[in-house]
Image (cartoon, rainbow, N blue to C red; front, side, top):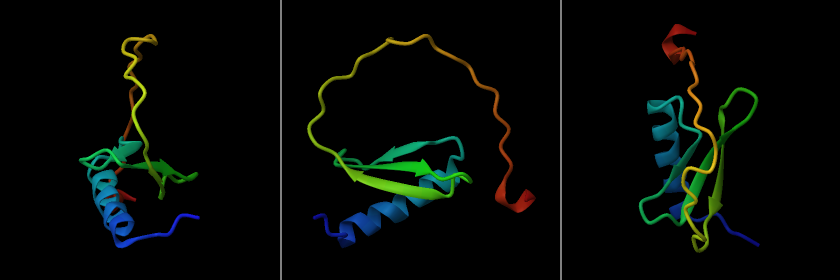
Length: 78
């Protein structure tokens, strides 16, 4: 069973700030890469937090790159 600690809640607040500052971000990791936050929800307004284990590998250039055109609506424009 995982217990929510002050460390988790502080990371949640950090993630929230980053997601609000960068609307296209879908993930956020802490500096020591022990936690990752995922933006979720139909309205992209939820945050799931996971504790990370050891990294396996960084597999580079494995998929064809794509370019997306996205329109961002600022909160104050809604």
